[in-house]
Length: 92
Image (cartoon, rainbow, N blue to C red; front, side, top):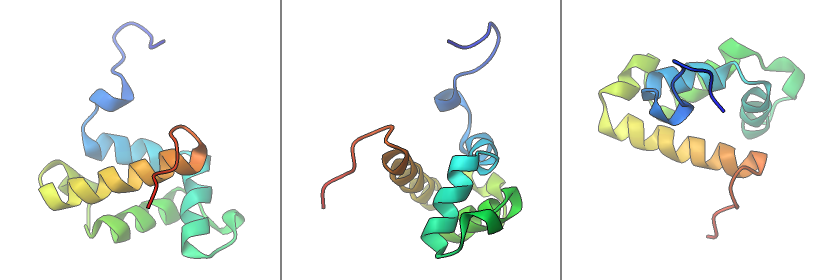
């Protein structure tokens, strides 16, 4: 349950969500795995670089304005949620 006055994660804009997940150790490990690197080598800035590469943006702010970038971010979040077990892995 959220504290009074706090927004739910899904109610935040995509740039805010991206900033939060890049600080998440699980996302850093996910990004490292996807990049073929040891998780220990990944940190917040490496995760942010991975996110910018995948979403094809130069700044997280673009996620709020570019429909294509927002769609790529949504796919990335879905893949991350499946990787963490938060949702079932999509079938191909």
